[in-house]
Length: 208
Ligand SMILES: C[S@@+](CC[C@H](N)C(=O)[O-])C[C@H]1O[C@@H](n2cnc3c(N)ncnc32)[C@H](O)[C@@H]1O
Image (cartoon, rainbow, N blue to C red; front, side, top):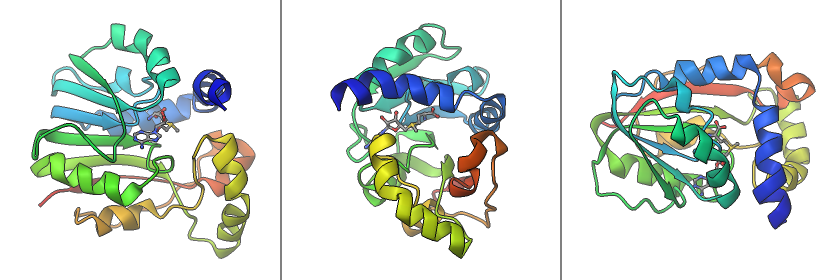
């Protein structure tokens, strides 16, 4: 699993998520970031070109995979904003309470081991009024698609190195005490035949 998860998977993922439509969604998300920013599940750094140096004071990124961190080195070297990369997991963040103005998760809550714990950490490290910016694929609103997501989830977890098709991430964000208005699920054509099974949600939840 080491060779697959740490060498091949980062490359496959970059290819699978390399479509310009996904890049545009990443841009729409992270261009809202401002101040002291934390990104959890940084992967190979695909969001990095879209942070606005005029709005972001400093960017800290957390990522547990050695293979991803290695692959991110190129993006980090070309970073438009000052960046600190910390190997680690979102469930236990090595930062004081209220350290960040913005926390970002992009296609990450699907893959973390314990999403409620990560979201508790997000809430803890955000300053009051700070924003949690997220884009995630989630459990479908459609009952038929949900059934397929549940059936295929065990395979997805292996192929996608812990990625789950069946997480209701918006509900978990609200459950963590972050304030989030209504959000809409969108089918992204760039995901091809998988698109109905990976509906996307994106938004900005606020710490009161
Ligand atoms: C689907 S990738 C998305 C990567 C990147 N955010 C992007 O937009 O391409 C999910 C990432 O979450 C990372 N991840 C898995 N478990 C994690 C955890 N417990 N805490 C933080 N990141 C985690 C994975 O290593 C992987 O890099």
